[in-house]
Each structure stands twice: as C-alpha cells, then as structure tokens.
Length: 318
Image (cartoon, rainbow, N blue to C red; front, top):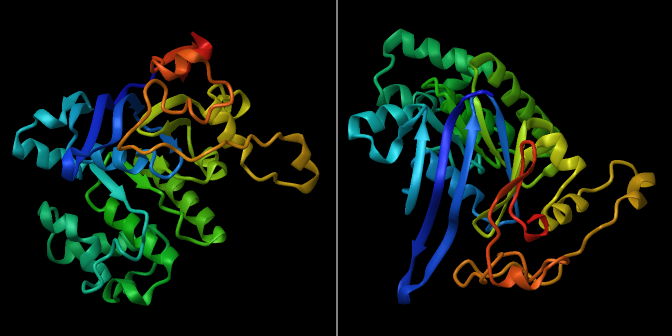
C-alpha cells in the first residue's frame, strides 16, 4: 500500500452568518490521499468540494478535525513550520482570468512564490521563470507580457507554472478546466499528467466533468452536501457505482455515440438539493433518493468498505 501524503480526519468547515445561521460546507470528511496519485472529487455545485480543497491547502481554517501532511498536523504547526508546509501545498484555481493579478507581468506572477520564500534572485530567478514557461508550453518571452494578452488556456498554463515554481509535493486543482474550451481542456489535463510524472506530484482534482475525472484520476470521491458518499478506484466506481447518488451522476454522462444512448438508463432525481443552512436529518440525500428507507431520514449511515478499496455511506449496504 502506497503511503499517504495527506490524511484528513473528520474535517469540518462551517461558515457562521448573521442570526446564528451556520452553513455546514464540509461536515465530517475523512480520507487519505496517497503519494503520487490523483484523487478526483466530484459532486453537484455546493457539495463542498472547493471548500475542502481550500481547507487542505490552508486558504480556509478548518472548524474541526485534523489535516496531516507527511504525518505532520498542519493545524498544530508553529508559524515557521506552517510557512514551510504551505510551500508544499499549492493550488490551481478555477478561473484563469480572476486568479492572475492584471497589474503584474507574467514573470512576476510566476515568481511570487520564489520571492516570498527567497528561493532565487537575479539571473537564477529569470532562468527558473523561463524554464517554467517552457514546461507549460509557453515561450520565455511571455514573461514580459500582462495577463490580458493571453487566452484562457494560456492563462491557466501560467497558473500551473506559478503553482510549480516553489516545487510543491501536493496540488489542489480546483476545476482547472471548467472555464476552457473542450479542445483546450484536453491539453491542460494532459499537461497536468505529464508534470505529475516528471515531478512526482500528488493531485486533488476537483471537477464536474465526470469523463475528464475518469481520464485523469486513480481514485474518485463523491461528495453531497458536505459529506463523502462514496470513494473507490476509478474503474470500479464507473463499473459498479454503489450509492444511489453516484448512480444518478454517472447516468447523466452523455453517451459517446448516438447508438449507445439507449443502453444507459437515465436516473432523474426529483427536487433540488437541500439547503446547507438547514440540512435534513439522517442521510442528506434521502429526500431525493429513489431507494430511500425509513432509517435514511433518521440516521446518517457510517462509511464502510463494502468491497476492497470501495467505500460507501449508505444504509443499503448495512
């Protein structure tokens, strides 16, 4: 078994608003991310995927729980230790337009981490920037330009170069392809896979596109309303989805060929996801579940390993 680089233990992230309102964006997630793997994370908008990713890298502080990097509790680290830990935990953001400072030249954007950690100066700094631009498919001369002079795909490549500059070990890719054209999406995903092999990186890949998640991921987790509903190897999840929510998600993937359209039964869920401010008791999915039982409305099912490496939180398997 490959050792874990990230361990998440019962992590919660709650946002407190006026009138004592609390949004339980992430509500008790536990999982391990193995060194060198890509863990895909899927679910509807509002399921807590991005919040979990931001909490792992330290952009948000967990309300409860532990996050360990190489066995070290990030939350208990001293300021100097935490600063060094943060260097190894980087993020690629969803919007390639909003994530780059429009007033800075590309070279200075990529070198933000180098400057913050004082990793390189002068000619060495320029060489690193030029090398990173080449590695993500751009030209070293692009370092002198501004973000508005680039396309969406090129900006995302710049965001990837910025994340790589400080030589991280773990990267959260938060829907890095959702704002891009389909042809550019494939280029970015292939670039991420190439860089993973070259740099021995570990990814948490957050996305809505299930076909793309299948292409890049080793394992896939399915979130719903702040909870992890299912976690499995990629091929096993697509061949044998256990949770009714996962089954509904996979049934919505468009058929690759019109002749295959009738071979997959579409599961249409009724109603809308409940509010994270007032989540339902029991399983958060029970109000929309086609296989719901009485117990589902009263008790949240515990996650259990139904098959080797295949975890699910559902009363159907108890």
